Amino acid sequence: MKKILSILADYYKTHFKWVSFLLCALLGAVLIFFAYDGLYNVQHIGQKIVMRENPYQRLIEHQQKLNFEIIGYCVLYFIAFAGAFFLQAIAEKDFSVFKSGRWWFLTILAIIMFSVRGSSIEYQKLFFSNTSSDFSSFYRKISYNLGGLITIIIPCFIYWFFTDRKEQPFYGFHTKGVTLKPYFVMLAIMLPFILWAGTQADFLESYPNYVRIYIAPNNPLYKWCVAAYELAYGSDFVFTEFFFRGFLILAFAKKFGHKAILPMCVFYITIHFGKPLGETISSFFGGLLLGVIAFRTRSIYGGIIIHLGIAYLMELVAMLAKAGCLHF
Image (cartoon, rainbow, N blue to C red; front, side, top):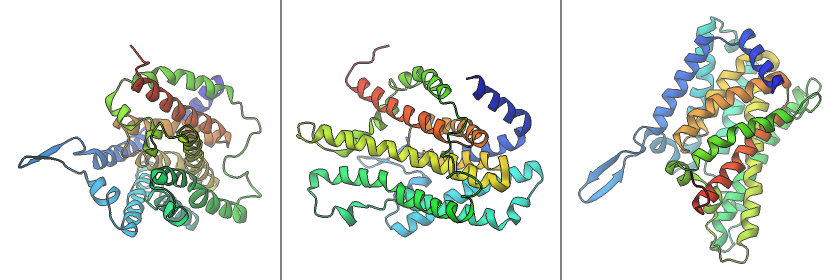
């Protein structure tokens, strides 16, 4: 833990600026309001109670046409990522980043990649159109989680291969001098908070995720499907960690240094929309922690441990809570 604390202390002394931090946090708060305003409000229409959609649901998440959905995500991610760079530039009175063709190319590439990734492209329509309806949701979940290999890893690898491969390992896949023990300690510290989350109604409405494969527990293949889903579910966190702490930090840091960290944090908030509000808010601070570590160590393995550890602990805690095994 001393090494992690030393990294954070060095970042605070060397790069951290309160005005930049507060402006980016404010942008994140505005985006959270956009995504959660009205989520729990209802309207009474005659005898019916209708949930009022918030702007995020109405304009993006529930968009019926795929091309409009992707455009919506592009706009949202541009506001979050480029907007944070702009606010940071205002705070530090340095707009040089916007004069860089590399910045514009990488920003547009990142936004398009993750907009396609976040959209409701149903890969199973291409590969599993003739499968049993009992397994359609399972195949959709599996294919979506593994889809990050096509929408994120391959495009980033192509970019890295032609531009950065002689200067750094593939964006964070670097182990030299990296100590992993502190990350397991951090997981142990987070465990009480995850256990507490297991007592909250909104948490249990979202977790465990495997119930959404919608396969009956008495199906002979149920346990195998759950295991396969959880493995694919974990792979999605590896892809996500690579994109945010690998590509968005290390590809940008080559020329823009620490200035990539706070914009990444605001961008990171947006992919948690629809999850419990506390989880979405905390993603900003978690993203900052992991971003600083990745920036300094040039490795994402610690972040992968944290990300996978939290994800699987949340699945386990929710499962135990719904089985009545948690009592406080």
